[in-house]
Image (tube, rainbow, N blue to C red; front, side):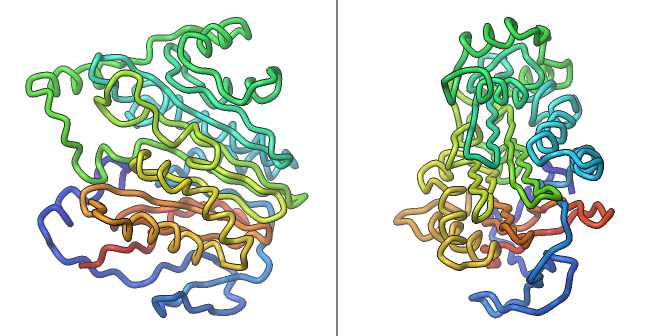
Length: 336
C-alpha cells in the first residue's frame, strides 16, 4: 500500500482494526514473545549485509543493496538509497515533486549519520533535489551539524549541486486545490508521514542511517519536523543499533523518539520491544490525540535483528537481505 493511501477512514470513523502479528525477520532461529504475547521472529545472528527502510520503497532498498553487495559501506548505501526516492517525482513526499507548504514552496529536510556518530543535516532547503547528499556534505566538509534555509542552499550551490524547481505540475495542482479552502486538518496517515528513513548494516557490521522528507503537506512556511533532527528522526549508535522515524514529526520530537529506541535497545530490549515502548510513550501521554495522527519506527540492532511498530495500521518496512527485497507490514498499537 502506498504511503499516501493508508488508513483513510479507520480510527477517524471508529472502525475496529484487528491484525495478527507481523513476522519481521526471515531467519527463524527462535521465537520471542512481545509484551502483548504476539509472536515475533527474533534471529540471534542475522545474515549481513542488510538494509531496511520505512514504507514500501523497494527501488530505494534495491539501490542500497547494490552498494552493499558490491562491498560498499553502509553510509554510501543509505545515501544512494534515499536519493532514489528524492528523485521520484510521483511520490509527492520526498525531494522533487514533494507537496509544498501553504505558500507554494517545496522545502526539504534531511539528515545522515555514520558509524562514528558523525552527522549532518539540512532544514528548509529549497531548489535542490538531493537534500540527503547536501546533509552528508555538511557532515563531511563543515564544522557544523545543521545548515538551514538560504545558507544551506548557497552551500549546496558552492559544491556544485544544480538548482532545480521542485514544484511539479501535479503537486502544484494539489496545492491550488487546497488553497480553495486553505483548511489545515491533515487526514490521518495520508499527510502525516512524508518521510523515507533508511538504515543499513554492511559486511563489516557497521551501521549508518539517513532520513529525508518534504515535510507535512501545506505546512506553515518555515515548519521543520523531526526528520532532520538527530535523535528525533534518526539516531545511530554503532555499538548498539539504529532507528529512524516517520509520521507526525512534532510528536516524535517531543519524545526524542529515535534516540529513545536506541537507548532502550542498549538496556537490553529487542528492536521490536524498543519500537513498541517508544510508541507507548506517545500514546500514553496525558491528553494524547494519537487517534488522529500516525507515527512509526523501524529499528535495527548490531546483530542485524529488526523491528517496526506504529500507532495505526498500514505502516510497513521494506527489508533487503540475502538477496530478497520484501515489504513487511508493521504491527501497530490501535486495534480498537
